[in-house]
Length: 73
Image 1 (cartoon, rainbow, N blue to C red):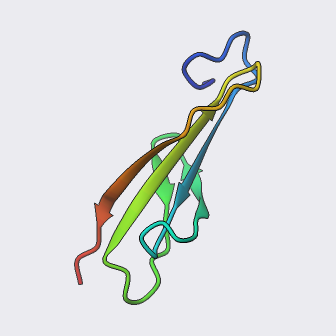
Image 2 (image 1 turned 180 degrees about the vertical axis):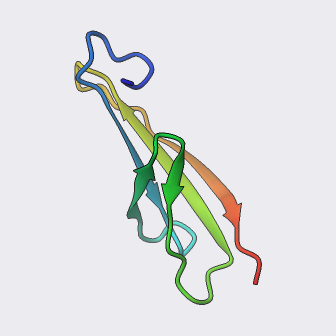
């Protein structure tokens, strides 16, 4: 399924996560179309999430959710 706003297909949706409060970002792999596969490093307590849909014309929107996922130990 193309991301919202993708005219005629050709769009993409990318996800990134950070384990150091947004200083660096890693690509997050989408699995099954409804979840992300994450591997938390030791000591991480929360995960900001960044979503970047790109439409068929190459327009990209970036949205970041701080502390989107809390890690309980």
